[in-house]
Every structure is written in structure tokens, then in C-alpha cells.
Length: 456
Image 1 (cartoon, rainbow, N blue to C red):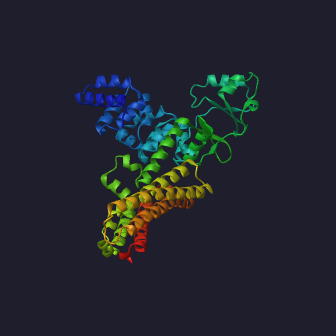
Image 2: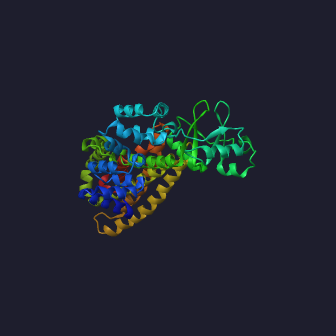
Image 3: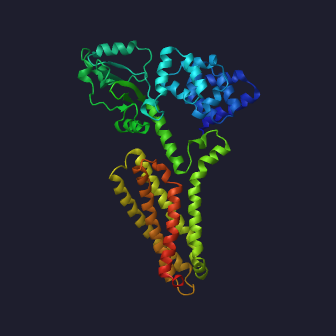
């Protein structure tokens, strides 16, 4: 949901565009932040987005807006534009932003834009594009500030002042003669030490770093765990290759959280993108097929007890609550475990501890709601033929068993997926729900067969 300020910006831009008041649009865009413009452009149609891009004040504003724009909209905005118009826009971006934007374009346009850049810039971009986009190498910036470890504090400050464009000036990285990362110095340490102190005497030599093929989620964990504003990235030889800055870390955290939530729903990032109805159907249908099969299996199981249900009609009234409570507990537990795996709080032997704990929680919750449901059954069906004791025991114990099994399944499934190196987020939606429904039916009618004579 847009904030009130952004909603006003969106409505104003749409009104001015409909009136053809281009001068007013240009004035409004000139006073607006590129990040705000990029957010508002999500809610405009294709023609309006292209008009907005054309009316931005200059190439720098266009570049900043493109870097903030959702990836699937970048291609739409720049489609069919001449290379001569786009090249200056791309040239005014930082190297990592160039790589991010170019990765969203088709191969032909991407190569034309790379060819239009200066040779040194083109080579740098091609190197970044070779890395997997979801690794440290894919999100790092090659623009960092590094100096030889023997550099003095005075020399480092002078070098910093002489540098026109520094991506992250809070850290100065110390390297040895071959370029290997050997330490890091904070800006605070640099200005508080005597001028003649070499970096080697004030640097932190135990550097928290990532390799170029480290998963971006792990890079985000490092930044969060150690409260870093930037994470240095080295190649496999230990040579400093770039840095991942805090703005990229925030993007990664948002992207990974969104990805996990969508996977838990049996969907993916295309849910927010401008893909066709058929494309979204094909993405989501396979996951829902598991739910369909589970529902079909549950209906077959219920059908097998049709005669017993006719004899004890009250049994049917409790099927939704037994399945619903079990499903909710399973989804809650799976969500907790998946999030724990994503943040690193649940791993290795700790996973078994969490599974035991969640099973215990399922027992306690099942006991509480089993007693409540049994009490309701006694109150509601007190005059039922044959007595109500068997029914009360059935629904009470069924809720207990169903919620306990659901908690165990909800915890165990993502842990198994993680051990098999499959993204555990896919376990929380259709798979857990389907399994829990089938188990709930089996538990319910199995319990009923023990305590209600008509099922015997």
C-alpha cells in the first residue's frame, strides 16, 4: 500500500499526464526523488511509465530511476529506444547497478549497450555479468577503497580526499602487494590514530568476508550478524574483488523474504510481474495439484466411512474443525522452521531440538482444544441416541492426535527438504497442508472406530 505522500504523487502525475501538461509533469518530477518515482511507476500503465521516463530531468535522474525500478519493468520502459538515448543513461550508473539493469534486458540490447560503453567499463560489466546474480559476485560493486597495508593514516586520508567517487567510505581495506585482503580499517579508527600510524597497526586483521560464489542470503546474514555496512568479497585466491554494500544487503533481505513467502504459497516472483494469465497459471498449477490429490484422497477416505457417518451423523459435524485445527498448526510450525532455516537460527542438530519442541507445543495445544471440543460435544449432543461419551472421546482425542501429528509434520518436512538441499520454503504450503489433511482424516476415523460402537 502506498503512503499518503506517494499516493498523492501518483494521482497528480496521472491527472497531469491525462491533461497533457508535460511542463507541470517535468517540474513535479524534478522535485521528486527517483526512488519515489520508481515506486509510483509500478501503478501506472505502460504508456504512462514511458512518458514519465521521457520527462525525467536528465540522464542521471533516468539512471537512478531505472536502478530503483522493479526488474520486470526495466525492459518495458527501455524497449524500442535507440541505443544513442540509452547509452548515456547506463554510463551514468555505478558498475553494480549497470550489471543489475543490463541483466533484465534481452541479450541483443544488452550487448549493444555494453559495446556502447567505454572499453574499461564494458570489461568490468562483462565480468560482473559472468557471476550468478544471486551470489556475492553478482551483487557486489567493484568500486571499493583499498590501500597497501603500509600506508600511513595521513596518506590514507589524503588518498580518500583525492578520490572523487567512493562507493563506501566508511571502511578502508588494507591489501598486501599481490592485492590480497589482509585487513580493514574503519573511518573512525583512521581519523583517531596518529598521522604516522600505518594501516597494518590499526586494522582489524580478522576480516569478515565472502567469496564471489557465496550465496547472497549468506552475505546478508554476515552483514546482519556482525553489523557491517559493507561486506568485502574476495576471489578464490583471496584477492579483493569488490564489496557488497548495505543497500544491496537490504534488497537481498527483502527479495529472499518475498521469495520464501511466495514459495510457501506455492507461487514465485512472477505473481508480481507483468506475465500473462497463462504464465501465472502454469507456475501455480503444479503446486496446487498436490493439494488436489490430497483433497481427493481425503474424500475417498471419508467415502469409505459413509455408512458409519449415516449411523453417527454427529461425526460429520466435527470433520472441518479437526482438519482446520491440524492444518493451522502444521502451517504455523512449518513457517517457524522455514524462517529459522532462512535466518540461520535452525540448522544441524538444532533442527531436531526444534522439532521436538514444536511437537510438544502441538501436544499442549491439542490437549487444550481437545478438552474444549469434547466439552462442546457433550453439551451439543447430550440427547444423542446411544450416549455421547464415545463421541466426546473421539473428537477430543482426534484433535489432540491431529494437532500433535501436524506439528511434527510441519517441523519435519522443511528439515528433510533442507537436508536434501531442496528449498524448504516449498514445504510449507501445499505439501504440508495435504499431508496434514490426509493424516487428520485417518486419525479421526481411526479414533472413532475405537470409541463409537457403530464404527466397530
